Amino acid sequence: MEKSEKVALLAIGVNLLLFAIKFIFAGFSGSIALKAEAFHSLSDLVASSTVFAGLIIARRKTRAFPYGLYKVENVASVLVAIAIIFAAYEILMEAVHGSGEDLKNLWPAIVGMVCVIGLTFGYSRYATRVGREINSPSLIADAKHISIDMFAAMVVLIGLVSNLAGVDLDRICAFIIVSIIVWCGGKILIDGIRVLLDASLDYPTLNLAQKVILAEPQVLSIEHLIGRNSGRYKFIEAKVILKTHDLDKAWFIAQQIEKNIRKEIKHVDRALIFYEPTQKETFIYALPVADTDHQHISSHFGEAPCFKLITVRHKDKTVTEEKIIKNPFVTVDHGKGILVAELLIKHSIDAVLTRETFEGRGPFYVFSSAAVEMLLTREKTVKLAMADLGISV
Image (cartoon, rainbow, N blue to C red; front, side, top):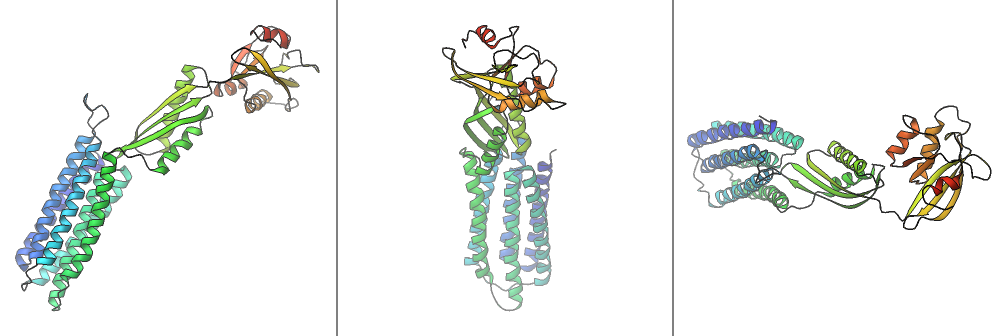
């Protein structure tokens, strides 16, 4: 049994106990308000039972409901909200139409109501904390519902104490408490209906999801990002444009983004990432060059004095730009290949053309993670190497 179910089951026990205490002391004192409050607790018992049933059913997934029955929790919270508002109506009617008869055995009834207030306060705090921890809307709603008992018990207690002093404050206090009850119930009702109508996730959650997605280096842009609640769980969907042209690599990147979303955002049942490869108009090749005229390819990637960047128009393989960048890491003792690879990535290259393989070496992993193609050539000059690719320079 999950923690939420244990707390919901405890709520049923608490409401049974509250009903017993109120009903017994209502008989002792002759208080109609206390008797009405006892039957109010009986309605709370029905509400708590609804929440418990909702938590049990919500986890089930069937062929007809492949996404689960999480919204059963929201249905339960809406029913609880209606029960809260109805309880407010009961208290209001009791305050308006109370009989005003003299009460008896007031001290036992007062002690009983103090116990009720302590019990409802303690349980509502506990259930609210657990409900927020596991993000259960129905459990939070039920905790607020039981906390209403505390306010209602205060109304009854004030009525009992004021009766001892010969002053009747029942009606004034009841109007104040009813307004609080209606506000709480209305908020729960609106929140529940929003989820049932598939309202969007709150802005902070969507903003966090956007940051998680854009933190992935291979993501160029986000086409759309949407999300919704269902019960305590969140569903997030995004379409992204990736730098890579490799579908296997794109799938891996999408899986990693989904994993990161679940890690950073609590209670995500499903994160679905749709992806498209980049549709670039130009393609940038990088070649290590060894001489001052920048025509001969260096046989040592990390020690090449310069790199030639050739921008090619994709549709007709026409060279649109040639650029030379110097290698600032030639004199570095260790890791120069990795440093050069990182430098080239900052220039948004799409492919690197070399006479040596990077397999199992640092630059291989740097280029792989950035979806940069690594091409081998046996040619010694830039012109011949590019000609093998069908490009004239």
